[in-house]
Length: 592
Image (cartoon, rainbow, N blue to C red; front, side, top):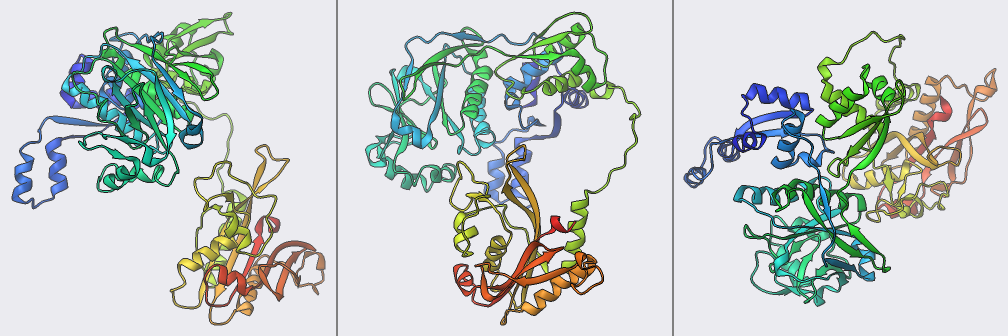
């Protein structure tokens, strides 16, 4: 709410003044509304009597919708925005976070959980004093984090617990669903893991997360020293450790598949709400005992140090700032900094607090200097060189080929760049290609490798559209991925063009006509032309994806650039296609 925000900032603004402040800080006042207005939009122009009665319980107090950067998780709640704006306007200094040593809080990770949801961190807030509004924001921040950085709880999920109701040490385990029994949050009956899944199938909010662990043989679960369940991540907490307005000591735990995200979530929650602790901005560590016996103290609320040459900042921003002026601008952006080094070669020692996980490189520091200085105040200058933008030759060539394919009656499709091994090779009757880019941890079996050909994707598209009237003529002009030892990243993209013709007859002659039309447009002559080195030709091929005797390699200047033919009946059966098909695929980069 606007009034709460202004109270936290310590100053009242008009709508125009606050809009300008947001712009200067690099965020945007997106809309001014109220709870009542939002509900009226939801109910439409003709609300029912019941909806009109429901509207009476909603407030007309103005609510600001503020758009922030996707990587500024510290601005997702009133506490974060108000602190950032107070520091930006010079009303307060950046908060100094304090790390308190662990006082007997231990969390032991068991070996079985490593293969299920292996990462976990935890922290404690002591002497917290919540109001009803701040308690609501505490819960709301967790949901906002779940929606963005946690990717709907798939990569990370957070749980908060009343420390007064549980006993350390805690244990992070993985057990069969039937062996886990507890009373879930907002429920009154004890259930096991399997029963919980059935129960939450009816829950409109939580049922969307069940698939994350439902099919696993073991579910992750956190117990306290008395075998009471704190949480079944990433689904639901136990009712026993539920926090309330009267809670004073809070345990914050976060589990997930991505260590960085897990840490960022806990750092963000601790930094935002530690201001309500008995000792403001103090966070107590928890000893994490990993499965291999290694102890780890977490969190460390200390800053991450970045050394940034002042000359770099000035070159990026186009300014001529002195060291002290640059440090002052960074302090306005919650980045305390000091300068060191000789005049003309100063280096900024920037301290990024745990809330600023977006500071990864010197360019991030330079960006914050520019924001604090004011983008409107940055000097403008004529570029020292003259350059004209133009389409990349390969992209222009591809667009021309697309136009030609469309002119011959073919429809362009766009398939996924990731595919399963089986669809790419076994279903196409081809051997595995050692050049395939393999995903280390694929989410499911449908997306295991980067595609090495376009034809499998076209066949899957054809399968999904086989009820369309015949003939079906589709093509795709896109990149495939191939491992390449000489590439800086170990792989390269290759632009291919593929087409499929499906009808009551194979239509090979029609597809060959399309191919030759392309060759005519590319001014590649026939083999008996006066300059045969520029000719293209078709020679017998043996690609197992095609019917024997009805397959040809496409050669240009004596080099193979593709293949054309009638698809093998076994390939058609593998993709559940009941009509004969012809297809070709070309490496069009070789034609450029």
